Length: 498
Image 1: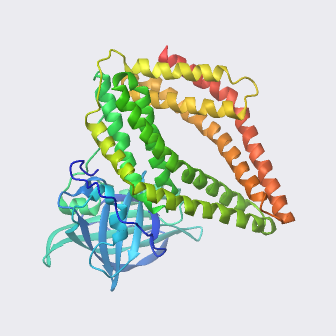
Image 2: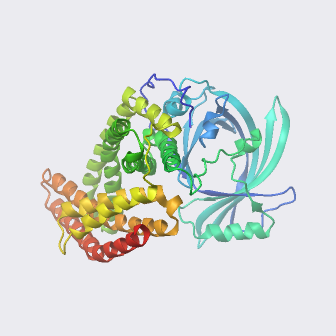
Image 3: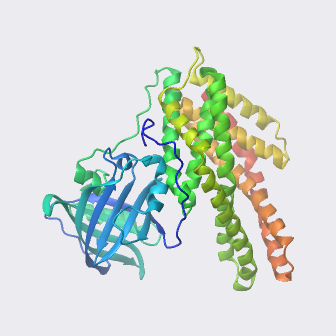
């Protein structure tokens, strides 16, 4: 995360994301190997031997590396490309621009603005990698690339360091074969990898692990400060991906971090200066409203693309303009979101979050995290008691909100409460998934009906009716599951908080 005292308040210049920018998800496992290691015999075809020369760029203080981000200029057989790798849950998002220029593209600087400010990007290491391997195939389909990298760390033409490592990278999105491949490689002599990217090994950098949670008997405010820091870092880590707009998960995780920050401030309000907490929550509510429409469209697009694949060709065609309609709305939403993420208001909010993670203004209080979580659970239990046998859509949505708040409060108290809180949190997630399915179905039906008003095709009307019926079925399935799940949630909550 960029340091608060170095970040410029000057908004970034407008970022125009070129369609030639390529974005992929990198799903890989790394293993360490010694000098005598050889790849075992694997089913598949050999990959061409490659020589990759990569020059890595960062600030003099390694701000990108400490945020888990790498930026490099790669040369292979005359082809030159700039590659940016961003954290994305357990994987990484790789963004590539084929460009011969010798300085980092302005697009990347704009994406990384919060991490760079106005600090200069400089070359920090050059790595030469000889890569060979196998494209593993099973049932005649490629499943993974297993590669052996021989890495040389270069400076002024001289080799400063050498090391080797093996990578297993999925190529079709299905990971069933990966554990088996890992076992085969370990039998051949591969060992645990320390998890560091090649750049970290080259620079002898230690991975900047997040600050560990306070001890269970630490003051409540210490846990609040830690939670604010954790969620603020998560927000900043996913800011570049949300700006790019190519991977829905980046925006989703940024929105989750925003909600969790609001929840922490709301739950811990008795411990904090009220005016300060309310003001920061208001700004986070503003950010959540910016992120919400784009995220909702991502959910709908994923659903309708999946549904389209289940239809025959005749019925799939009328769905195509509807999906295109959603894609156009999403593109417009991305432009609006980008404008706000470049605003002084957003930059001010980021600065306030960094400060909150370091020293949140507090008041003297004897209230405990247990007390705070119990209070949110009581509100949830009351809401569940009011649902009745046939709750309205509005009542279900309200219960969903109360469930989220009770879960986030429980997460704040989890280090001090232990397993009972963990069990409640897991049950709350299951409830959220079902209630979320109900809400998604409502939004999907609204989108279909809005689009249908503009349609004159009989076939489109038929497919729209089919889709509306599926949304009703989704809601019915959710309603069938709700009573049992809600009873289980109350039971878990009573064990945790009473």
